[in-house]
Length: 501
Image (cartoon, rainbow, N blue to C red; front, top):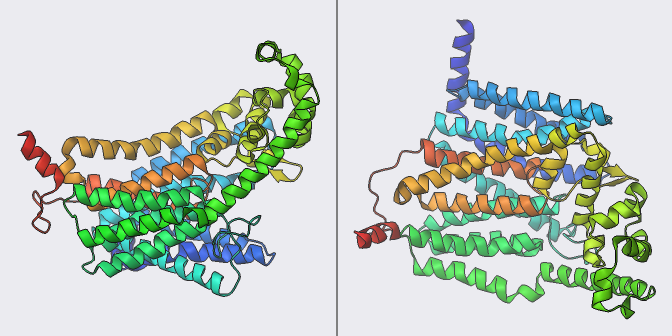
């Protein structure tokens, strides 16, 4: 009886201060990133920032559990995560466990995604105003990030996105791809909220600051996010009947300037530098190939070459360019994995090399490793980490087929909610908010597929969790009016329906 009374009191207190907690939670994300950056920069242990993240996660999980009306869901999630990790540990022991503590820490980084999603769903169920607070939270995070970036530039302490070309503005943040992912997820929501403001200057300021950061970050995906966000919001507002010529002009102008300035962007500068480096390497490789007389072979003779012939001919090339992989797995396995290619990008590309390393490593381990994954510390060779730079590949190598299926099933559920809502009643569910968060989810998945910047990075995965929770809220929790008029204009859905009739 006393426990029930204490729980009710806790619920009441949490509901009363829920807005404050959500704001603190969003403010804490970039602050913890800055703390981690400076600890690393000063040569100190990043353990304090890790412990702080764990504390924030634990506090949020407790708050979500207390506010939830369906606490069994939290127990089901805990049971699935616990059983899977036991099986994962068993597979790691079979292969030879190096560091269980480090392995568990990495696991927490992944399972925080569903846990944070559950918590924010509980928050928005407990108080419908939480959705508005979440959008405000996006601005809080964005404001702190913007201030940090400006301070890094003013003080001359910006570490640069690309060290080789000394280009790109990263700010006091440690991981380029994670920061690009965060800004990519924030921007559509920021533009959506700013678009609703009566004064077009609000949209102009937000568009310049958010898209400007994406531009100066300098990654290809960040640059793409500028157009996905601006053109995406144009499309969504047109569908929802919220067209505004002045605001459209603002968004188009930002997109046009970004396009015009393509050849002076940090992204273009880095790509040109990288391309030149690859050309030089390819030239060296071609000269090494010429030494064996390959240039004298006709196309038919080259086609008839056996793998053994190629193994003998290209041995020197692979030993020269991929000595680390060759020493670890043998030249034949490495060459077979590259399909005996003489394309320098296939042989020396960092992302492909890391996938190759983990793939060959997986081949050496027992079948249980394919099911439940490898320990991350086994991916270290001669002091270099070969953990892959693609998140979905990373989930497979770290947690096996079963782990990848479980994680994809979790994500697919939210994609199903989107599809179900649009099929059931697109006019009702396709709102400006839904479109903006849909664009954010799209950009998050693109970043996860192409980089390791989200699913295993707690600073970025936090925002993915929030986006997923918002999708659930918009489909399953939010109450919609039967009719909604916006500035006297009818949504395109309504016009289309009228024409069809």
